[in-house]
Length: 366
Ligand code: GAL
Image 1 (cartoon, protein in one colour):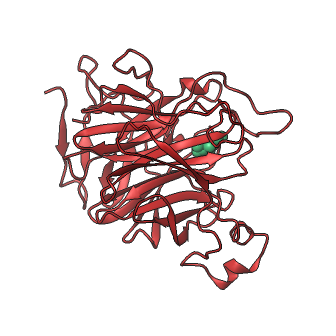
Image 2 (image 1 turned 90 degrees about the horizontal axis):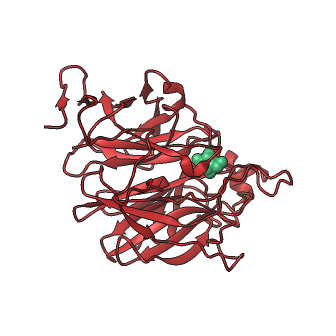
Image 3 (image 1 turned 30 degrees about the horizontal axis):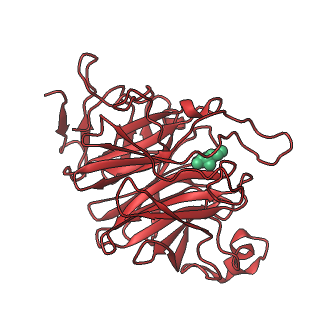
């Protein structure tokens, strides 16, 4: 056996999973922070990504980060460090260790400056879900203008996991609709983002999509100038939102939402809002996806827990065929050279209902 794992059932009230770090001689392994090469020997280029498990294969989608890293513009046409949009990568694997590059499944459109896919726009946090009714693969991402003012969702659709994806366009969710949990107070002040954006639709930046056991889909977005998360119901075909949504964690500035379900409860791991700089992750649990959500604090323990081991989450992957086992997928952004950003993947343990992340130099998900 090239790995060890054991359940420590007695130590905590709930199920507690402990995965032993591998010794240096053992391989292959997940080595967070190293360059991960694909089967062609090139560095895996799939940032802010998400994972789809479909018919025995994992598909890892992410932002392609290539070319020059531009520093913030002195003329303030954009405020942050960035690279041009190249597209969305897709890699496949059977074991989460060996990754085959399936190509750019949503390439940039350099010829059309008005396109959401123009290199000068923003395309972040792509996530693909499979719709069992339509048999389509639906790609959602954060689509934005250079100055992040558009704050919209982009959607594309394909018949196969590696595309080609047809781009359907971008939109702001929840046009002229109040959230299900809105209060009279929330509706009062026209200067608040919720009221300000009522007619044109709510802002949607960092995002993820989640498919529940009953096949219903949900969209989680950093909304209201990133201050408050919105959870929106997806239409049956996963191509739109229905107008049913709630505001959660008001004013908590949560970004990089990652959602998973364990033993009937919904979990969220998110980051704070500090651009490419790492910060302390947060976790939360709920009995219903609509809430109420209860914050459980920083899931990280040990050295560098306060900066999520120098990373920012992007997705939580349930390991196929291993109920209760999850991988926290995160990005170690290199803001001086964004294409050299790395990946941090760690197994999630549980102490009672609280998800716990501890650093591991090397480990195997088998
Ligand atoms: C982060 C966000 C990333 C990206 C970055 C740009 O806060 O999580 O997806 O938008 O800011 O500075």
